[in-house]
Length: 299
Ligand SMILES: [Zn+2]
Image (cartoon, rainbow, N blue to C red; front, side):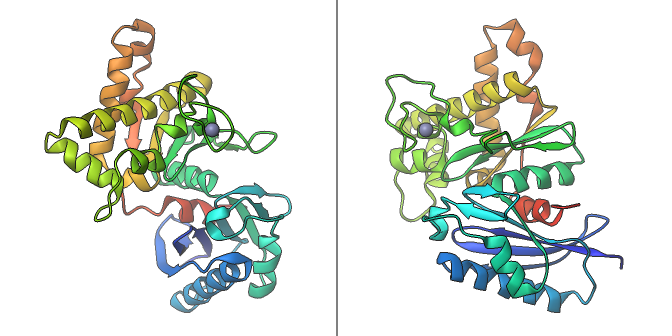
């Protein structure tokens, strides 16, 4: 076996790490519940890396790549506003803290950005928009083979594009943002559920013919379709890949969003000619796109 790379996807509930071979094959995968706070996040990440080193007795090349939620200063490897990880104060120098612990170089990047890199690598596409529908709504842009972060790291923050002046107030301070209708938290607010994840409960109820559920699901789908329309008209990517927790719904999600896109295009030959529904993909539920993208950081 040739050289391998290590990538970590640090999420609020779990940290998933993997070893990626040069040919794209995943050689080992390890997951641990994420401990909150800077010390906890570093401890969890180190535990995962140690387990990966044990699982694959091969030298690795390049830095250890890490994807984290929140605002990331890529130059400094620092993270801010990762509230779900218990990192809500000042900048946390995650790259240095973890690098010291591992005795290795660590590269840190935003989780949606690494997922977009992973989606590009796994699909063989070098031009795509990755729309992450999790608690929030955000996109990663891989354009002509390059990740577009933006001058302020705000490229792809589609969830905070306001579309409804009469809509509810968003945590960002604006009103009627896409995230308030097209996200996991929007579904949880409109369709609370305790036994199943709300998105699954909603889609199951709609599938069973519940009229209120159908209305909530379709409003959500229209919001996702609006996000896709805005992103596509801004950068015209070859492929649109939907991922994130809500994408666990798989083809049921693709079908309702594609239907909303076709509906929006029905009165517009221009939109119809762009075939947004035909460019839509959903990440298969078992593909660890963010950890794969993290492993490819610094390539
Ligand atoms: Zn907002």
